Image (cartoon, rainbow, N blue to C red; front, top):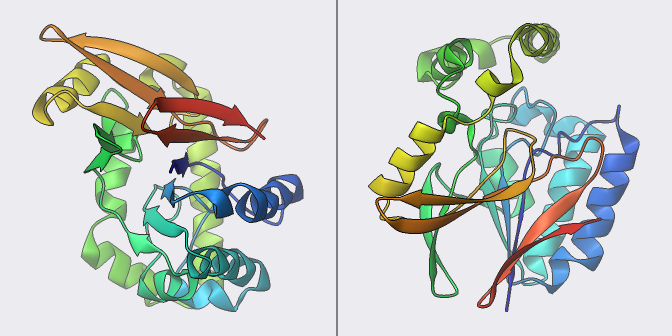
Length: 239
């Protein structure tokens, strides 16, 4: 018995190799698992559930649905790129929503799962954007616009995000260690699994004399991979 964790795939037609790896991963690897946790940013962007009319988006959802029907539980967490994925996407994909953060009993080990962006508290401008993007009134107004207009606005946001990355020091966009340690303290010193930072690694934190393991999931830009966890522990795998 084992579970798999992925995040930051940023799937889009513009990156066909990542999509090919995703379909293969679902069919060959995820189908053997008890559960698959998608911890945010499955898509490069998501402008609303009515975009399921797009064949590419529909294919991703249907592939997850096939996985769920086959017996692998699919859990989906919102990231910053797909925060608007709603009930229609969940229904079509067969995925169940997992809130950010959530504490799991993972084969006997208490494990906290997050997207990871709330840990990057030194990036003040991003945190302001995060609050706005999750505001129900902001979402309602955005979703009330025509699909084409929403796509155009999202592309503008992506461009602004890339500019922010170029102008901001890398360490600012990474997790703040103080925030990580406070989070581990608040949740009782669990193992932590998250994505968002695109800096895959295994870290060990000592908090109040307690040793805590933190796994950062890989993004699917230059490489693709996942985290496999069972009763013996976790290990990172590359596709």
